[in-house]
Length: 178
Image (cartoon, rainbow, N blue to C red):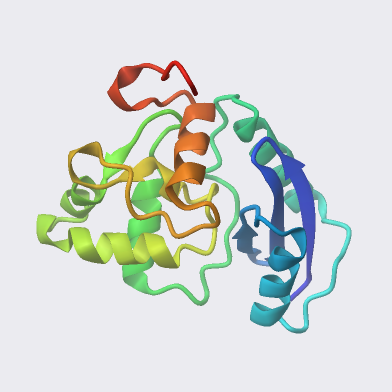
């Protein structure tokens, strides 16, 4: 493990952990700032806070821009896929191709993988996603476009907020109270 850092975005303080091969973890904001650090240290006990190398700093700037409402493509950010199953890699590749402001359902991803009956497995894969935002699991919805299945801190509220920042609104327009 090379290092980790935290940085501010429109949705709060996010974290990145990286190795030479690419990002190993993206952390979404926790309600308590120390909770993210605790979770990161539990998962990567040898991790040290460090100044991000150039490729990580570029990823940070692009994530911040996306979360500020710019149409930024993150699909070319290097990820360390070493601990991810072959199935998850396929699912994440489809998810990474979803443009900002657009969505697919778990079933639609399953169909793109060649078997519409894999929707549940796609959902489980999204739940294991170690790179939210970069692998945009927030752009994956339940059947009929339902806002379901977001296990990150803040749950569905965080998912809805991220999608709204990107310009996606259920029914095609923002709510009066959004």
